Image 1: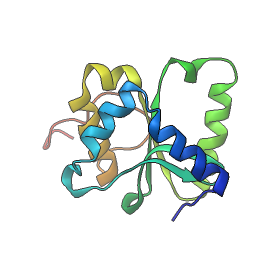
Image 2: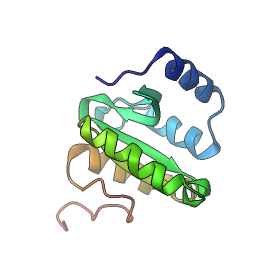
Image 3: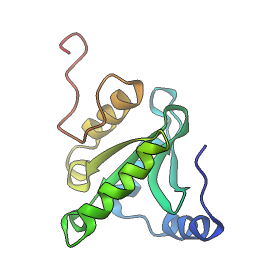
Image 4: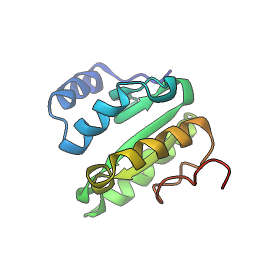
Length: 133
């Protein structure tokens, strides 16, 4: 199980109170435990805070807004994802715009990745319908 320092835990608590609209929408859907999958929001992991984490499947779901494409953020995300991978955690990054425009497809994709039906290499649209994979 991933844990964070006291400082990271406090920061995670702070972030839970200040979730973005895409994070709130996704949390409302994930807290219903789609297909029995339990997610935690703003979960501390080392010196990082994961947007959402499914401990049973070692899957982190990150909501990437436009800031993730600016400045040194892409390089920092690569380092962060590498550290998580070394801890045995798969990282799924979903653009915030997808959550805002097609929450159902985002949830379908997250569940498919958590089940292992689809790789966690980013959001390329929902997985194909059953039988068409």
